[in-house]
Length: 183
Length: 455
Image 1: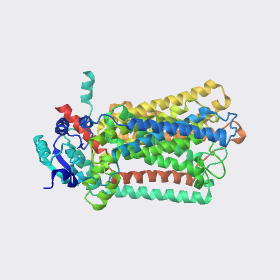
Image 2 (image 1 turned 30 degrees about the horizontal axis):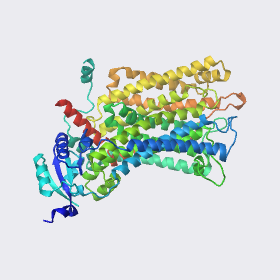
Image 3 (image 1 turned 90 degrees about the horizontal axis):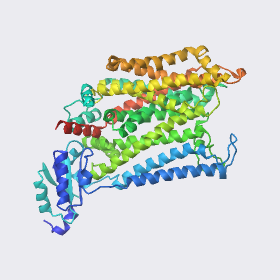
Image 4 (image 1 turned 60 degrees about the vertical axis):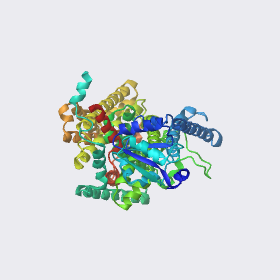
C-alpha cells in the first residue's frame, strides 16, 4: 500500500451507500461532526436539509440572477433610447423621441431574458457542469444514485482522511456497502 | 379538520404503493425498454404526413407569395394571425402549470408539468412560424431584430408588433431553458438505465454529468424556483402584448382596454383544453392512470371552467362597452357579429366557449374521461373560432363602408394551419418516445412525502 501522503493520487475517496434518505442525512451529519469537510452527498431527488448538513447554507445564485436581470433591463432600455433618440430619431404617432412608456414592454422582456440566462449559466457555472467525467461513476452501484440509493462520499483530499480510519468510521454508520472510488 | 376530510374523499395525486425504484422504472421504461407500440407508429406516421403538407404549403408560399392565402385589403391578417394567437395561447397552459402551480406549491402539477412544458415549446414553435410566413418575405425575418446594419435602420420600438418579437423570442427561449433544466436529473436517470451505447452517449451528453450531488440539488432548486418566478410574469406579459397588438390600433372591436387580461384568460382556457386533449389518450396508452389520476383531470376541468367564465365575462363586457361607448362603428361591429355574414361562426363561438364549458359544473361530467376529452376538444375549436372572429370581423367592417370586404380562407390557408397541427403532434410523439413524459425526480419527491405522511 502506498504511503498515506499520496493516497489521494490514486484514490478519489470512499463512497458509502445507504438505503434511505434519513440514513444518508444522519450519516452526513455525523461525518460533519467528525470533522470531515471535503465530502458530498448524492441522492435521487433533493433531500431537505442535506445541503445544510454538508455545511452549505447559501448560494450566490440569487445575486447572479439579480445582476442578469438588471443588465437585461438596463441594456434593453438604453438600446431603445439609443435607437429612438440618438441613432434614428423619427416621429411616430406624434410621440416624442424619448417616449419611455412605450419602451417598457421590451425592457421587461429583456430583463426576464437576462435573468433566466443568468440563472442557467449560474447554475452550471457554480456546479461545475457540464462535467464529462467524474470519479464517483467508477463505482458500479452508483448508477442507483439516480434510482433509489443514497450515497455519501468522503474525499481523499480532506485533511482528516485516512483510508483505514475513514473506512471504519463509515462502516459504523451502517451503510449497505463502502467502496473505494478510484480516480 | 374539515378540509382534511375533504382531501381524503378526492382521488390522490399519486396512487399509493409506489417506491423510488418503481416510479423510476415505470417512467423510464416508456422510453428505454417498452417496445414501441403500434399506435405510436400509426400516430406518428399520420402526423408526419401532415407535417409534409405543411412543408409543401410553405414551399408553395415561398414560390408564389402570400397571395395564395385568402387575405385581401382590408382583411390583411387572416389565418396567419389567427393561428399565431391560437398556438401561443395553447402554449401558456404549459408555463402556467409548471411555473405558477410550482410557486403555489400545488403538488398535483408534478405528473403533468413535463409534457405540458413540451407542449408549450412545440406550440410556441408553431406560433412563431406564422408571423414570419406572413411577412411576405420570410427570409428577411432578421430585420425584426435590432442588429447593426448597413441600412442604418432600427426597429420601431413604439409598435406592439415589435414588442411581440421580443416577447415571443424571450418566451420561447425561457420555456426551452425551463424545460431543459427541469429534465437534466431525469436525463441522468435515463443515462444510468440506458442499455444501448447510443442511448448512454446521447442521454449522457444531455445530462451534462449530473450526479445528484446535494450541493447541486441545492442550487438546482433555487434556480428552478427563480425560473418559475420569472416565467410567471413572463407568460402574462406575452399574451398581454399579443392583446395589445389589437388593442393599440383603432379598429372597431379591437380598441378595448379589456383585451390584455381577456387574452390571457383565453390563452389559459385553451391551453388547459390542449393539455387535457393530450393527457387523456396519453395516460390510457401508457397506462399512467396511477400518475395522472382523476384528481388531475378534475382539477384541470375546474381551472378550465373558471377561465371559461372569465372569457365569457370578456364577451359580455366587449358588447356592453361597445353599446356604452355610443360609437357608431363600435356598436355596428357587435351587431354585425350577431347578425352579419359571419354570424353562424359567432354563434358557434358562443356555444363552444360559453355553453359547453358549463357542463364542467357537474361532477358526473368531470369524472367521465370521455366527456372531458370531448369538452376539451370543443374548447380548442371554440378558442380558435374566437380568434377568427376577433381578427376577421373587425378588419372586414371598419369605419368606411366603401372599404368593407369579406374574407374567406383558401385551400392554402387550411393546409398551412392543418400542417402545423401535424408538426405539433409529430413533435409530441417524438417527445413521448425519446424523453421522460413525467418528471421522475419530482415523482420520487412525491413518494418520499407519501412515506413521511404514512409514518
